[in-house]
Length: 232
Image 1 (spheres, one colour):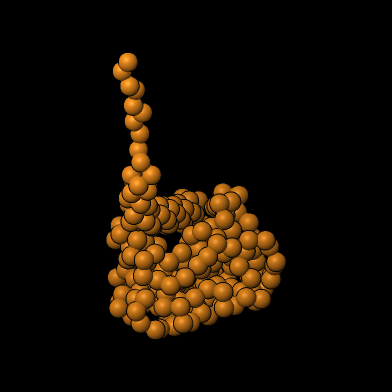
Image 2 (cartoon, rainbow, N blue to C red):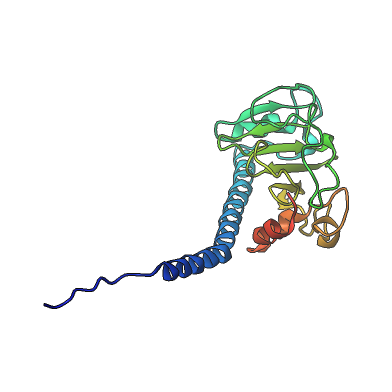
């Protein structure tokens, strides 16, 4: 009679295979996660930038002034009160005249230090965010500052206030509307230029991160760099 032999893997072979799989996973998975997060942030950045631009274009099409100097700092004439009409299903989170407590909004009076600079050592002044706050349906937060004559700063929290890290230049970006044009802060013509000073996680500065919007716009690998190099 012919003998039948059973074939299979030994325990040692199985353990070696599992070990190889574990090493490969340890090498590749963190990179995949970083790429995924970076893609999400980049997509949201471009979407938010487009949303702001479209709102300005619609205002111009309706012959509504986009000049911040035409809007006085009073309860009913703040710039964002007009701008909010050109967004889809927005939620008014209030302003320094009308303090509101709305779930998902940034309460700059209660938590003025919740946003941090790119180096993590400072918090942007809360009064840079108090001239109007809007939350979109996807959780994006839009914050306004228009006390500077004929100029307007618009800050966008890409993933919403309740999602960390709430860092300038990571998930919070600033745009500058000046001379009839919306530009990412850091671009020529804006008030804060110079990446070494205003977009550098390796230095300490109270406005560090404010100029990162232009870098995020021009550099497709920017968000990968931030995720790898900025402490949350």
